[in-house]
Amino acid sequence: MILPGDFEPHHHWYGKALNATIHPMISFFLNLEQERIVTRYCHMHPSVQRDKLKEILNHKVKYFPWAGADLLNVTSATGKRQMVVIENNSCPSGQKSMPLVDDNQEQGSYRLLIERTFKPRLKNLRNRINGGLAVIYDKNEMETSGYAEVIADVMNEPVYYVPFFKNECQNVRFVDGVMEILFEEEWIPIRAAFRYVTQKPWNRIPVNAKTRIINPTLACLAGGRNKMVAAKAYDIFNAELMPYGLKINIPETIWDVSKNEIPLWVRKMGGHAVIKVPYSNAGQGVYTIVTEEELDTFMELEFDYDLFIVQSLIGNSNWSSTTSSGKLYHVGTIPNQKNQTFVADIRMMVCATETGIQPLCTYARRAEKPLVDNILTGTDSWSMLGTNLSFKHEDGSWGSDTNRLVLMDRRDFNKLGIGLDDLIEAYIQTVLSMVAIDKMAQTLVNKQGRFRSKLFKSLNDDQSLLDEILID
Image 1 (tube, rainbow, N blue to C red):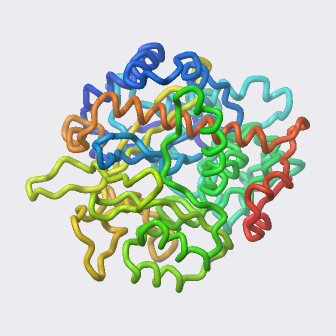
Image 2: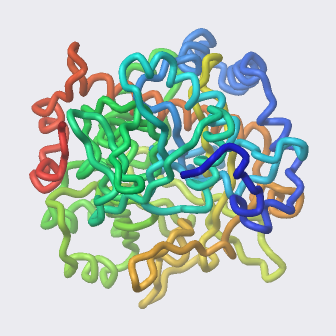
Image 3: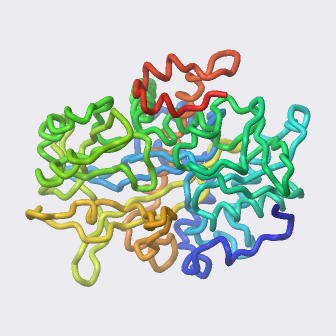
């Protein structure tokens, strides 16, 4: 149990982030009014219809109020730069990597998320469920404990802080859709929970839970933790956006691919591709293929699921996937003193508020090894292209390679080679992908608020996944 007044900043930020000074451009971006962002974006993209963009930025989010997209800064052979969405996450990390925007606000954007998004969604809940508040998690204790302590302060009541691992559910149960927490040998009903459960959350958190959960499992199945359905959500929303000059930028994506079909699609893309297990996260289940050797290694692996997605690979100008729209290449970091360029991605976290979807925090990550011009036999492409900092220890616990963390501070930010318009583009792309997933989530619920299992199966007919989903 966490009580109001327990928050200690040094427990919830990396030391290098807590002591960093935010870059002025990042601070300026985070404080830009929506009207100015819309005006600038439409000025830079004349084909975009202003009213449609404003409508999307003010979309009334129902199931996916807190999101964090991973984006790549890329360019084409003709030098056209853009931000490409790799995925959008329903339990995004990032708070512990974000320098404080205001030195006088010691709880930073932890508090902004709870005040802007979590608290407003708890109105009138006591009339439905007379229970407490909880934070449930399966990793990232530095951030999850921070959220628990801030919720206790903002709501001025105790918060239950509960581990909820994939194979250890003894502290949490659901009774008639209501979450209950085992505390001091007593089961406590929970009216609302903040969720940071990332590993197959649908196998222990019911889709139709009555406890208000942010984000609900439905957001994961609709695309927040399901790359297969996310790809379809983006495709459907892009068709709606086309007349308005807007588009979610994504790699060329082939979905519903069985394992034995994968070599055919890799060959079609010129021998360079990315293969993804659709329901993994934190850098797990993603395989970059640039050589026959890497493809052979992948084909020897065994998997829990039957279907995969194959995406075009964004690499160097000499080796990227061949697609109908041409090749895309990493812009990468500014060359270091050894003249090396590294692949980097940007995490943009946003939240739904009563005044629209707003940016919350951002950071970047770089790959372990520099980008090379030519692929040699035995090349490990993941070390050049993989940016996720999470890794698993032998005991199954999670760690983070903070040496590759790029802060948005005065020291690191300039290495990324991006400007204010790139940040605005990253924000717009994040919101577009977030809204696409939220719309898909709304489609997956009937008028009675029940999960439409048959529709979901038609979108994602992977029996191994379907067997895992806990409906009630």
